[in-house]
Image (cartoon, rainbow over all chains, first blue to last red; front, top):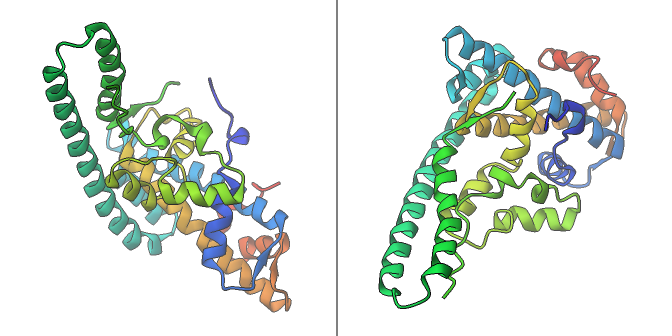
Length: 149
Length: 128
């Protein structure tokens, strides 16, 4: 299931949108330029990852964390990114917390609902329950993703 | 009866295929709705934070053999940083296009920017 770096590109539509929003109206971007920027972005991801990973390894950690990435940005001389990244991270963390709570609440609601619907065919619901339960678990697993190598 | 619970897991977790919307129109739509999610607000807000699909970013990170585990936050920050990087390189390349009195950004403008700007040194020799 190993993907090669060459095979992985970031979606063109998104890259194009980011570029367009960064540039003033009336400016166009050639296909070749767009392609090159997209490639550059992929290289950036790889370089940043490698850099961040060095910090994690130095700290004898196996898991790359946000701090490692921020340290990598500084190392790569992209200090200008630090402030906006920190802000975005705060918002992201709040959003994650909200998601977990929503998913917890859904689970509770579902259980409540199932209790009252005891008369209905149990088999049907058990199947549903199993499928549904995969999601909250996936949410929890999502904290640290294991990368198989 | 069979209550369809909106998937709390965003498409960024598993469905990298669905995130590949090469079509411009669809791409925009997907962005707005949080990648085909009609579900809870937090999920939409989450995907608005990062334009780039986290699953794809993570897949890219995984190609590095030295990387074993990466927290969700780290994937998010790299995605966000990449976004900032794209903005930055586009703007810097534009300067060269304008010098050439052009309104269209071309490949050579990118090359010039990469050569001239220190932060982009890591890109030298990496693009086709």
